[in-house]
Image 1 (cartoon, one colour):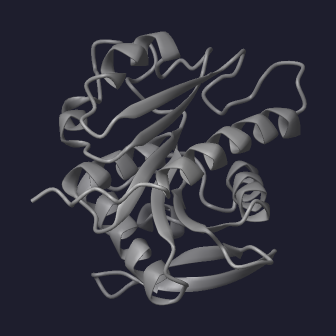
Image 2 (image 1 turned 30 degrees about the vertical axis):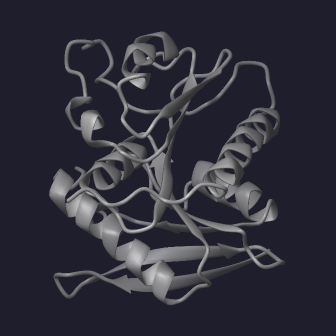
Length: 229
């Protein structure tokens, strides 16, 4: 596996940092993986998951949202984040092999991936969220689910049982309502960052990556959904 850092030109003329994790063999899929609200794509969580997926033959592209690259504290508004994600997808497609496309991310990055997928993205095979932020901690009535009725591609949700942003039990009622189909994978004892007490992080990560790659392989056997008009 090799990594390559590059810059992506955004629609406002500025650039943001990105990194490609290339498998040592020809990739069978590509995953654009977005970071969470509090840390960028250099965070160990992002690096370690991207590396593990690349070792299983997935080309992974990570990147910084504009606010993170500009070292600003608060995340950009959703339309800015969505546009950035779409731009990175286009850049990855233009400079890499033509393989099955997936998008996803950790926490906020995963939520933005579901937004983009619900809006429609050409030839998208599925969306993957690692700790979906269903609601702010302690505010279960502030649900982030309005767009899910427009999500017409398969969705894989990897959720820690101790996630204060929404447990698997809280997410379960929304799974069957996703038009593209959804699979919920609870991680026993894990928190919002998929950390399990008294379990080495590499053990949890190995379990999660195995679930993710098995699901991705299944999606590559089906035709991609048509973009939402």
